Image: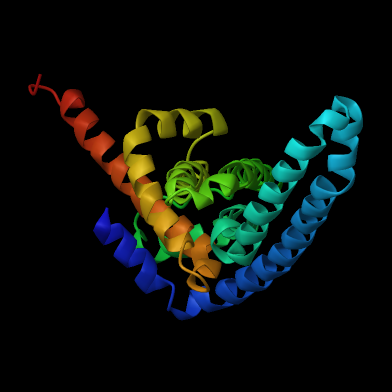
Length: 248
């Protein structure tokens, strides 16, 4: 697994990846700006109109607790927005991966597995839908963990584990869908759930590094292409002896 991660990192510096890297960084920065603006609007509403609405619903007695809660939410989310490069990038890179996963995977397959049958590009609509689903989940996890970031890193640890699961799941399924129907790719991910999760820890670590995390779609996709190939290779090794006469 470490070898696959190193191969993915090394290939990011090759010429075929440079164009994809520039495109993915540009799109990631644009999406990050939009997401920060939307979250700031949500934050403003929660601490102004939202607080007024809740007070009208619960009565004047709730003014004090709601004011404290509003301050807490403002502080927690403001802290999260300041550190947005870390806590928003999983959602951003999940969206970006939907656009460039096949281009990256095709380059990895041609470079490292030229003798294997090439994968079939995942329909762009399906890839984007998968990216949007994971992005929404990552954003929901971010919002849920933000208040806990103040408690001795508990929120950060929780966010890291959730990010590993979500991104590991997404990138593996995108790599597997090039060779399997959608349902089979998801089933394959469930069969190898622990391996995929551990691989997701590498991606979560990568996406937690500011600036470098803009290249997460390249690293995550390339890494999971290697992981899918290796898991399929092991599966063939287990199946082939059973098919050979005289070996049972």
